[in-house]
Length: 113
Image (cartoon, rainbow, N blue to C red; front, side, top):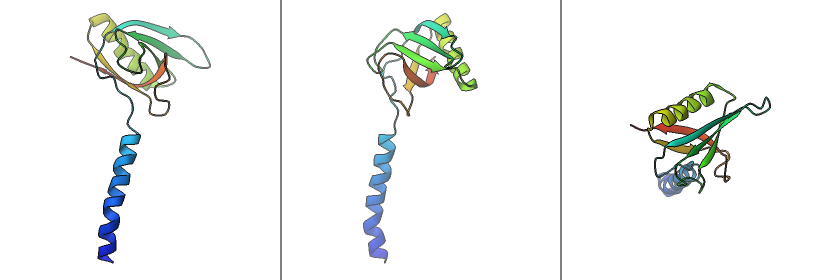
């Protein structure tokens, strides 16, 4: 029985690692500055669009922040802070949607020092 477990363990570990890698969300490799913030007042899909100064993520510079909950409002706050202070941000696209060209949905926005 022990021998069988030792044979299965490396296989299970490799599956676990593959699943972790497959679920990794796209993240920008070059921090950028937010150049524009545009809240979009649509009752069916409240959101904001931001424009950054590079295309290192998804090959585009325009992204969407969902404003359906407080997390989206916090992300919008970070975007406005970046725009007004000139501090760079790192962007992370949603796991669920991935890169979808212009207006890809953001999952996270990191304010840099």
